[in-house]
Image 1 (cartoon, rainbow, N blue to C red):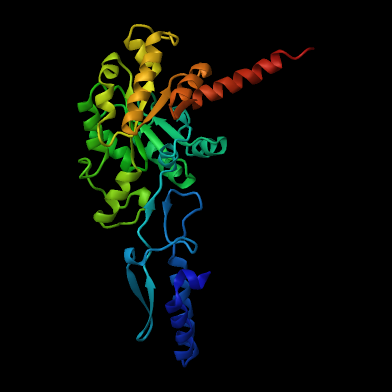
Image 2: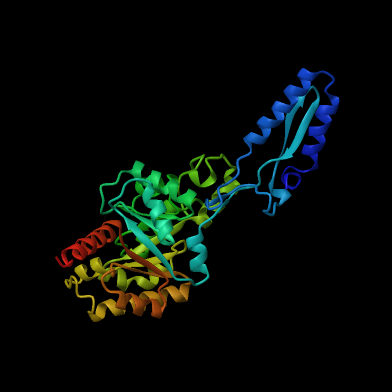
Length: 345
């Protein structure tokens, strides 16, 4: 396995170093230099969403750079550099295959442990809600980096559809941005421009992103990979948005339209009327438009109505926002308290 990873040049240098060392101190120094080289190779965690050089991973040598590491005198190890890192987004991959996916919204628990909870529960993504929480950007980015390591993509709903929010949460480790209240194709285009690097958008460049293991990479290689992995999700939450749904879905760079059912009904003046015909119309038109343009339709705000969720998934929605950490915690607590109150004395 080591020979496969390091190549014949490593072992030739290793044994050559010891055969060429005529005095013990030189041999000892050579040995510890080699140990330091071994220790410097970073292996990716098995579930991490960035991929480095692995013994069992195919390596395109055209996409690597060789480096020479001095050992002793004129002797050096010639090793291939790590191949270009692939930024992974399993949520996007599942949606591309037409699979049903689910997210958990986080707006209460501000520590990184919530990521492991989401992963253990089996969610496909963690949805960090900056629009309706007191979370700071720092907290959001810490959770997002943990999400990268855990293999559960972080999607962040920003409080405003502006570059200073969108680019910062993405730079901080998120793999998707959720833009609330989009009402027109022009608004959707501005979200894409803030989230995507040129030529798809106008996002400013930053080096050492968490998505790349904090490595600096040539922009020519990094930007297309980041654009491919980053999701742009716009929310339909108004009658105006529904009227423009065909144009919104057609915007290049938009990956998903997530219907915020509660805000949509509030905009219609029908709060809480989940069985209103306009709700079904909104899902029918959005799902049809997404199907025509190869995009994803998502269900949001219906955690109390699993029957409607089933209907809309049957119609073609493939992403379900299942509920919040607060809602899950409160429901479980109330159930346990009820169990005790129902005990017979």
